[in-house]
Amino acid sequence: MKPFGKKTLAMLLMSCMMLAAAGCGSKSADTKEETASAAEAPAKQEQPVKVVWWHSMSGDVGKAAQQLVDEFNAEHKDIVVQAEYQGKYDESLNKLKATLGSDSGPSLIQVYEIGSRFMIDSKAITPVQQFIDGEQYDTSSLEPNILNYYTFDNKLYSMPFNTSNPILYYNKDAFKAAGLDPEKAPTTYEEVAEAAKKLTKSGQAGGSFAIYGWFMEQLFANQGAELLDNGNGRTQPATASLLASDAGVKTLDWWKKMIDDKTMLNLGRKTDDTSKAFAAGQIAMTLDSTASLRSIVKSAEGKFEVGTGFLPKADANVKSGVIVGGASNWILNNRPEAEQKAAWEFIKFLAEPKSQAEWHINTGYFPITQKAYDEQIVKDNMTKYPQFQTAVNQLHQTAPSLATQGAVMGVFPEARQLTETAIEEVLNNKKSSKQALEDAAKAITSKIEEYNKTVSK
Image (cartoon, rainbow, N blue to C red):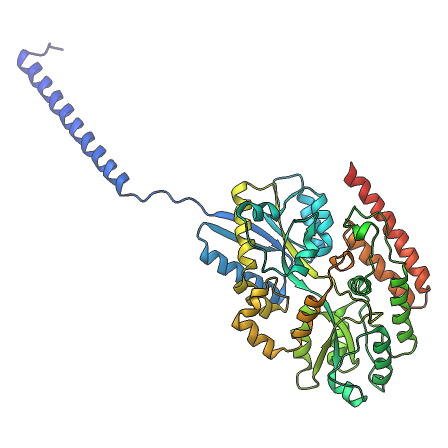
């Protein structure tokens, strides 16, 4: 190859310089465009904090819960609550137990009241008292008799959400036909037994109570009697069941005598069965939760008027009352701090008067805040369902005590089942009240002892 001439070499150098200049110019323009684009681009938005809420609300109640979640999410762009139904309370708690010790599981969980001792002992939760103290959150408008149950050692561990207690439902038309005052519910064991006799006729029994351990717990409290030792498990962890005490025997003897007199029917364990029998006019009295009030009243529409009364007492002179039932929300401590704070924001939203008013009229559960009764929708609902005033009065007239504060033990679900078995044994003539309750108390005490060993390890 011939060497480049001077002229040719000069032309090549000139071409390279022009290409280099063109390249530099292009790079500079690109850089300016990128800089301009970066300036115009919006700042990167932070992702909202996700709160997973496990709950046990199904059907219409589940829809009411989801409605509250949707309202919260619409108001809080920095938090997204994801509600997840986990089955009934027992199922949900068992699912939680399977997640303990791992990073899985929810941010927040709804647990029924009898699961409280286990939740505290699990050491898997952050007490809501920590958030209350941290921001001086005002709890003064919250119902004291509801807070009372969920308070341990002067500390609120969870926030009440859905709350109920049992009341007596009766058929006013049947009362009138039997010569009883339709505006006056029987208030004592004796009065219930007398009314049941007068109400019993062909095709109609005086009443029926579902074989439900919750009712026995409530009937204990209404006598001022404690279900467990050590102040119902409140002053120290419980070590023994007091189910076979005079309060238990007296209650079961009363119940059994009405069955023997054929003035009461034994329809088994399900309150659904007793409420259906009540609606059909087959029984004139029953016990059920305040949360069932709307459905019970609606089922009787066009057939008879429903009356409501306080839970019957063994002795009218004893000042006592009932224990709250239902559930509360617990914050799990294995979640990041931001997530726990977001869960607390949701808890506060659920406790607001507007939220509780909406929850109350859509479900029948008590508002946990007294300010909810000032909401117009609650006033209108009370006008439509005046029977609910009985439930409110019973809650407010309950005398605070270790009995009405409610028993707490880590094996409460099992204890409730054993109590129901004992009731069945008595009503089905298999054992005396004393024997059945003593056997159940012994079994419950054994389970408490086993549980306490696992907690102390």
